Image (cartoon, rainbow, N blue to C red; front, side):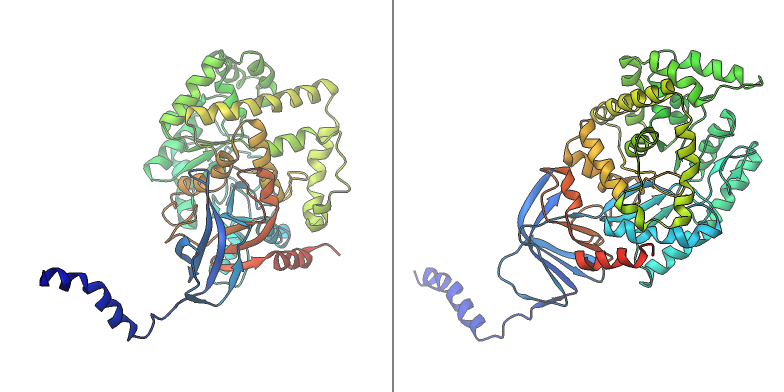
Amino acid sequence: MKLYRFLLGLPVAALLLGAGRPPAKPAVYDLVISHVNVVDVERGQVRADQLVAVVAGKIVRVGPAGPARYTARRTLDGRGRYLLPGLWDMHVHFRGGDSLAAANKKSLALFLAHGITTVRDCGGDLTPSVLAWRRAEDTGTLAGPRIFTSGPKIDGPGAYWPGSLEVETPAQIGRALDSLQRLGVDFVKIYDSKISGEAYLNTISQAEQRGLKTTGHMPYSVTLGDAVARGLDATEHLYYVFKACSGKEDSLTALVRASLATPKPLGLFALLPAVYDTYRPAAADRIFRLMAAHHTAAVPTLYVGKTLAELPDHDHARDTLRAYIDPKIQATYARRLASARQQPPAARAFTQKLEAKFMTLVPQMQAAGVTLLAGSDCGAYNSFVYPGASLQAELGLLVQAGLTPAQALRAATVNGARFMGVAGRTGTVAVGKDADLLLLAANPLADIANVKRIAAVVLRGRAYPAPALAAMLRAIKNP
């Protein structure tokens, strides 16, 4: 009985002893976002009334808000707001040569102002500048999204884009990969303007042996299945996936190969009507399952396709974002615009039909387990595809195509982090992750258009509320 009374009194005694001690010192955080709704992009759920705390650019606390027992150098009121990982644009371009370096640099502010905290530069001719921007961002002297870059594209002799590494033989491929590794690129981008099918597949194989990720376009002289089997990590756009959805893919590929020795070799656009007419659901199902099994991702880039398809009929003169695009970048739009306006009506109609068909592939790939990555293909020469806003529009089209808002958000957050091999440090709102965050005024799981309702962006732990973002845009606005 005495033992029982002794044990019963322990909690009281402990309380009495604790009452004589000074209270625990409150934690000191660099940034606290209080009473916020945290969007779990992986589960497609919202955790209400949370507190998210940041120290030295890292998330150190995520949990119920409760009574405040902390000190923060800066706070953001999260009441009625929604916090999710910063968005990733998995297909952008910094290009145009040294004369356009400063013009390209202005786009960093546009990305940040639209909630994009990470971009993947898919090949260009400004690699020294891109690497310099990345160093400046890391030291805090430049505000802009984190940048993953491929450096120069790999292509064949006489490549279309300036700065490309031109390869034909295995030795040339090896030297090209050596140069990319010396630059410290994050992946290898292969382009299809001149590269042979053999060199294309050999580039994938050699890169795979070096542990380098490969992604890009694909010459129609090879099959996507062959590229996937070699180790292709992602295919950009849907032209190449679509060819693999043809019930006559092998015959069409043989036709392209046979044409290469003629004065008029068949290219992608010449073959697309035949691919369209021979589309078969069973073939589509086979390639999607193969891609899923080999973890080959797809970057649909629906928005750039829609924008370019509408160029002949859409007047962009009154686009509000055009004021923030450097005139030198705007000048690069003329080439595509002139080409689009020269298309005959039948070609325009087919392009519209093709883009509609591409939309139907997206939910099929999602259902088959293919990893989807959200990319806008913004940059010089891609007319009126404005950095930042174009990724928001891409998310809208992914949902319009049949994805849920949660699936679209995953394509623009955690899927990108996993693809680049950094999901351990970013891509979700969790303790230990980078504090690259997007604070919205409304729930994006309810309506994907709410990604436009930005209350603040947090990058590397630094908060940029809406007024600060607006000031960044004013600084780059054309006179």
